[in-house]
Image (tube, rainbow over all chains, first blue to last red; front, side, top):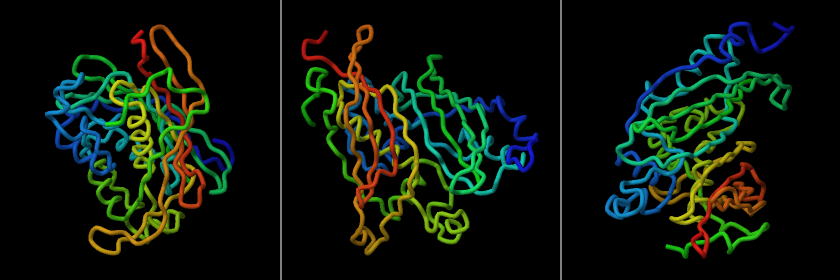
Length: 157
Length: 156
């Protein structure tokens, strides 16, 4: 471990570590509540009758919605707990996300998520010594196809 | 619904129809419940101060969801959002509530974007866009990019 580095040996060991799989069902009501919270009136996300006549054949989830995550089912929850146990700095902010949308997600779909800590780096920022953790997630649907992938960045300082 | 936009309709520099949003404390509670993100950073004043952001901030993921709406509204039912990314660079602070439903006067956020590239790949007609969320002062707090596939007029 470098002098004064935020990245402890314990943290370094987490790089490449996967968690999951976590299975969650995408429920119609959860999609509607999510669309309402975004303020998105698109009938594909709100009106099951309209959506069932669309090419999607069922209520569609807004891209990025992967089912209502109870605590145990939030893919990144355990990773963040393991980061904290390994000595990550206490203050955390969401840094951003990249999504790749491969297949539509809709009501009734069952998504199996696996997540992995892809990388941990540190940089000096206006927050002081800052640690950036990249977390990759892959969501596979009930047909066995990858529906979406994400890469998010957690900022800790 | 708006008329379906097609690949032939856009050029590099074409502006994406902007989308206005007003973040409120009420909305953040609703988002927490709908997204499952119960981080007190977004509703607890003391906790937000301890996290060095001053006051509860708008969830980055909510701003990301606004940008998704910006894109899906624009590309219409026949368009396909293939990629979207954004970075939560600047803090945004929600309007406080005046009544149960109405926020106080204050900031309005705008989701905006423009086309940076268009090209064909295989049978797909792809369009790259620069997108961002702008605060009430006109500052971009959430820059990002998106890749979409659009239908064509000819249907080919």
